Each structure stands twice: as C-alpha cells, then as structure tokens.
Image: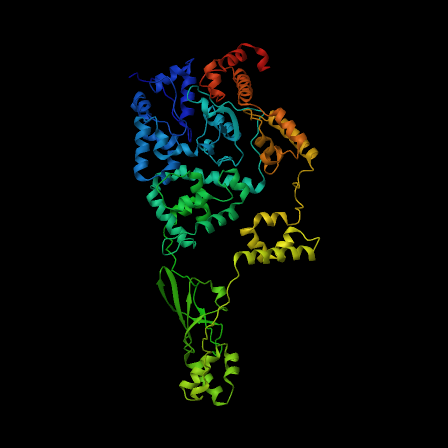
Length: 625
C-alpha cells in the first residue's frame, strides 16, 4: 500500500469529496483516475453522501495527521444526520460499510428509494465562498449545502446557488468549487423562505449534535411521548394519523410541503409510515418536519425528555358540569372526579354531582364544550330531584307537566309516584298490545311492477315536457331506481335527451391551441436537460386539466393536430439530449467520448443505435454552436 506524503486537513463542515478535490489540485495530478488510484486504490471515485472504504484513505495518511475513518464519517459525511433515524443494528452496519467497503451501502437502509428528493447539482453559498476565501484562502463544498431540503445557508441566511456540477459526474472527476459570478440563488416567497431557512438551521443542529442523540430506538420513544403529549395518540397505542397529517398540512402549507416533495396524492402519506413504528428508513427531512411540528425544534424534541406523559382525559380537563335541572349548580362545573372504565377499548365514565346526588354516564370520548347539552344516560336522579318531584306531586301538579318541567319521560314520573304511593297503581300507561296482520299484503309480480314503473316514468315526462334528466330522476326516484336495475335499456330509450352530449370545453379549440404553442416553446427553451415533448408534458405546462383526455379529443381538432406534429419520439428526444450534453461538456472543456456523452445524457441504448449519431455530434462543430 502506497503511503500519502501529503493530505489536506478538512475544513469545518467540508464534505469528503471536497477534501479530495483539494488533494487532487494540490498534487497536480492531471487525471482523476490517478488520484482515485492513489486514494482509494481503484480507478473511480466514491459516493458523495455515504462513501465506503474510508479506512483505505486513513491507512494511507500519516498517523500524525489524526485523520481517522471515524473522524471522516462524523465530520465529512451525512451519517450524523441519518443516525437518530437508524436502528442500532443498521447504524453499526452503515459505519462498518463506510469504513471497510460495501458497494451496496445504500441498500442497507433503503436510501436508494429517496434519491428522488435530492438536489441534482452541487450547491454553494456566495457569502460562505467569500468567508472561506478570506479565512482559508480558498472556497470549498460545504456538507450542509448538499442535503435535500436545504435551500438556504443556515449561517448567513442567504439562498444557496446551484453549480454546474451534476452528482452523476462526481465518481469520475474532481470539480473544485469555482463560483459563477452571474448566478443567483433561487427566489422564494417571504413565508416559504422563512420556513426553508428554519429547516436548514434544524438540519445544521442535527449534524452538530447527532453524537449524543442516540439511535432510532430512543427517537421512537420520544415520538410516542410527544404524540401522547399533543393528543395524537391514545392509551391503546392508536395514533390519529389522518388528523396529524392534516394538521401538518395546515401548519406548513401545501405549497411549502410540495416544494420539499412532502405532499403527494393530496396528503402527507409519510406521516402514517413514520407513526406506524416500522423499522424501515424514512428520509431525515420527513422526520424533521414531524419533529418541528410536534416540539417546535429538534433541540426541544430531543432535550425535552422531562415532559411527562399527559393524564388520560377522554372527557377534557375537570371539573365537569352537573346536568340536573333542579340542582342549584345546573350546567356549572362542579364534578371534580369521575369513574372511567373501558369496555372493548372504548371509555365509559360515570359523573356524580356532590351537591344533588345526580349521576349520569357517557360513552366514547366527548370534548368538554359538548358536555353541556345533548343526550346522557342517567344512572340515578339523586335526592334533590326526588325531593322536587315529591313536592310537586304533593301539590297536585300533573305528571305530564312535571315531566315537561324536569326534561324527563312521563313514565319516569308515573313510576316514581306509584312506588311512593302518591299516585294510583293504574296510573302507569299500558302499551298497546301487538296485533299481527292476518293477511299480509302480497307483493306484485315482476311484470306488474315493470308496467307500473314504466307508466309512472312516462306520466312524469308527459306532465313535464321540458324536464331534464336530473330533475326527472329526482321527481320519480323510486321508478328511476327500479328501472335502472331491471329495465335499463328501456329507460335509456324513453328518457329526455342529454343536454351535455358535448363536453363543456369543446368550444375552446383556439384558446387551447394558443396555450399549447406557448407551452411547446417553453419546453424547448427550458434550461437544463431537455424535456420530452408529449401530450401530458405539454398539457401540464399549459395548465390544462386532464391533458391526455382533452388534447387527444376530436373536440379540439386544431390543438390535437398541432401537438401530434410536435410530439417527439423516444429517439428524437434522445438526440436532443445528446446535442445538449455535447454542448455542456464542450463548454466545460471536458474530453468527449461516446461513452461519456451517453452516460452524461442518461441514454438507455443497449443496442448502441445512437453511437454513430453521438460520434457525429462530437466531430461536427455545428451541433454545439
């Protein structure tokens, strides 16, 4: 193993790839392949976020530099950001893979599934470039700026700028940070910008304090505690995921979550996956959004472990109201203690007033504000109520009037009076005896019902000649329901003609055509990798609802023919990407080969049909003017 006589010390928050870029420049090695052989012992580089086989580098560096693999992992990779959301087993497996090598390191945690959330290009902050140049004499790639969801520098609060360095090119070339003077950071609305800066600073806090936060086992315990504390998880371990997700959308806003790829299919589906306590890996950005919603910040979430679990209060905070109308404290909060039992995981509580003895029960959880009205299950009317009924019966008040005044059933008053011998025993109402029908009415047969419903349908049309289908179905709903089920063909033939035979948007061919022409030009002129021109892409760009249905419809002949003439085949699109890629590589001064162009343009061409075209683009200068 060849020892390295020189290796640059990493700067604060410098990603390992940036350290290797500075090593490559300092050594003056003309080819990246030679640098990779000197550092890794292989001809190509390594992954940006979780490089593996770091021990190979540390063994080649003199021990006096104190640049160990553990130090590289904790200070120059994103592992500290992942650690609180990895189980102890997976965390140890990742560290082992990063130290000693594993080509499938991302598969250990399923990180490949969330690569769609990552930035496509390296990013930097202009003020960081100025500060680093002043302090260290050169700029470098910061680790925090490359993390998904970080659009602002947490130190200076300015928007990060997207460089011209694609992530896909990093394994075979070294690109030191060279800021572009004509580029500015992406602009956002003030509210969204404040939230993005907040998220960036939370990511920075996790990177700095991850060593003492533990693994996902502890994070999960904190999740359960905070969910109970905020009222999203009950004693049975059931989390109200739908309510939690909706509150998160209301808290952050749909546009902000969409920007972070955290709002899909009309909801935050990742909330349910995290709260299910499954051991699968979820992107740290999702965890941060949930953590900041529950605790306000990551520091409060991980440090606020002294918060005790809230007392189980399915009926709100005591005291509770008395519902006895004759009590001096009617509808006042005087019941301090209640008895709660659970039947089939559902709470059932008994409320007893200390001032009148009135006792009632409630099923299910009932908010405090809804306990002053509505139905209750009375257990005992209490001594105060009995005294009032006895006094009114003694005064000769009618039982029906007493029941009306006390909001109870008259049979309750009659039963009470008979038991106290204040009313005669025959005062109780007797129920009407059940008398079964001797000859139940026979249902008409199928043919009779069909004739009846057909006639009802025709009579309704005759009486209302201008009636619409919708109004007719409302007017004769019973006949419509039966005929739809058993006589649909006759019903269709004998119904008013539909007034919506043509779509409402069918008369806007010229308007759609103008929008589509603008959309096609925007797609062709859009910066970055060329986008394929298709019905769906043009429709989305033009803001057309259900583009594939409308743009392919015969109701829009001009629009349909225009798009059909401009839609690209797969080969046409691939050729446009090749031309664009050749231009970009030529501007960067890269050595052009067929393989490099095909790889950079992301061309899937197993039969190599486009190799000749690529070679022609490389040799012919007209393609990159």
